[in-house]
Image (cartoon, rainbow, N blue to C red; front, top):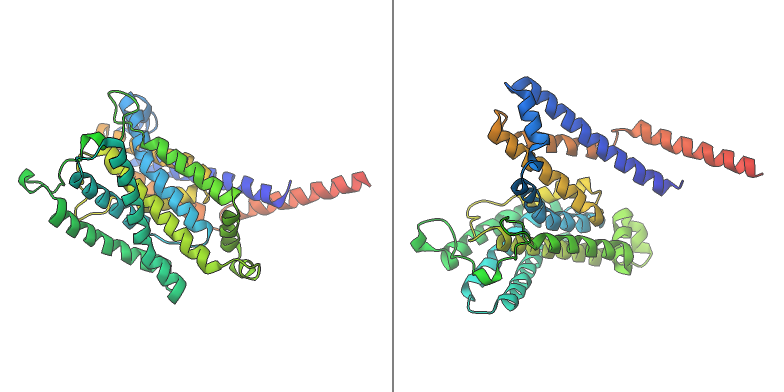
Length: 361
């Protein structure tokens, strides 16, 4: 067994252990705070599978996380810890809705494709500022991207309020999105839409890009060791810039898919949807591997659906799932968590290789 195989096996075990420990702690808390802990725990674990509408909801919640999780994976592969996915997702949804309601005379498919292009372009434009600040001025991309998210939120509010808000409706919502460009439903009677297929395709294409292309190899080299990549002839700055722009574009597309799949109007006024920050958790669970993003997104969506069911049928608040998410991140991110076990795996593997070599001689 090679060191890379040991690393992969350890990462899987560490993530699984983090999930089980966090869930175990959460269930223990439920036991003490709930008047009917059996009912609450059953609702959390089994509830999401008891109705077709709930299973559909799992996939609905999973869909936007496919895009933001994939965007995070690509950026983090190059060691670019940008948080611009939140702002890119929001502005992609905003400008996509604006274009849709102001060009509602267009035919369905051409309008849908142009809306996607508008959203991708908006996401890329959103990512340009922190990316350029990092490349040109060595500004910390975490800080600049978080600040940029607030700028994009206010721009989204301004653009919505003055350009496509449905004033006669008396609510903080846009004009209705044209029916001809709504994402097609996969199952009649449920809200499950075709956006999940686009999200899965994006994750697969991202995996092929990162692990099967020359540019993807450069991205991984920059993420592993910038100095080595530089002396190997790889333009570190180009990789840093391009990965952030690609991530922003994917997040922007996610915003368009979400707004055209689950909503009748643009409703995110004065608030951020939160999917960009959730994408960080998905990326952490997926270990920055786009192919594992669907698994991580599905797990997170299942937890949130279970927490929602539990909140409706028991006395445990839905915020409980935030505690579980926080614990998972803490365990996964902790370098010393299960470090002794990793060392044991490496030592045992070295002994086996040495014994095999001696036996061969």
